[in-house]
Image 1 (tube, rainbow, N blue to C red):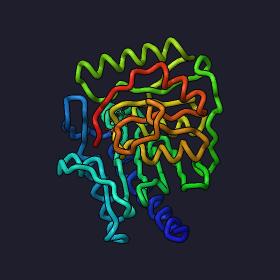
Image 2 (cartoon, rainbow, N blue to C red):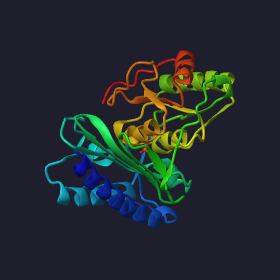
Image 3 (cartoon, rainbow, N blue to C red):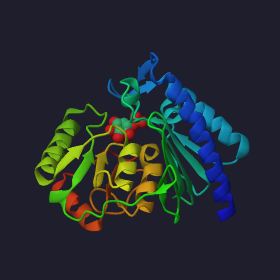
Length: 274
Ligand code: LIP
């Protein structure tokens, strides 16, 4: 597997660079925008083009592998299924709202799972020229430099990254605001970078101590999750149980103690499973 993993990794970097070029080219131009589940759930022609390009490049090399992509899933409406086969999981642009509004935190995110476990993760922010990389058991890196999470153990001294998200369901928005209220009261402060992948990478580099979000999908967090974990962060379901890759929610914290404190102040919103 090690040998195969190296090959996957080389290809992942190659396609990330290509995806990054397309995203960079489109960033300052006028965008063709469409909506998906609601008026705040955005997709652009660039999201779709990047996903098609990347899938076709990987498929050429690995025609029998499985693929999960944000935009293909939106287009086909197929139920997500994660199998034991090698699976390439892609979010062509994580942070589409940022992309549309010219906010530079836009990521290409690519994770590979084998036996339902993530073995490599690449998150590339082409506008900021930041390439985050990880392979299971080998650490996490930003442009080649090794990353370490902050080590913060006390919520009172922590910065917690969280998001409003794209659901406009009144009940969900209310619960999220209540959670944000509690996090602000309990911590040094909150931040939102608008991309799950970027948020996880920030935790990995110790820029912020934790990240929690309800309502995301496997393509948003699979790569960033490995990067944060390989940098020493703990990853779990916000309730404190083991992460459910289809559970649509994640808590990443620099230490177990910080994770437990965050978990205990939150209302755990059930977003349904993918
Ligand atoms: C985004 C997530 C972000 C969340 C947004 C959205 P997309 O993914 O990464 O954390 O708050 O609602 O889901 O749609 O830009 O790939």
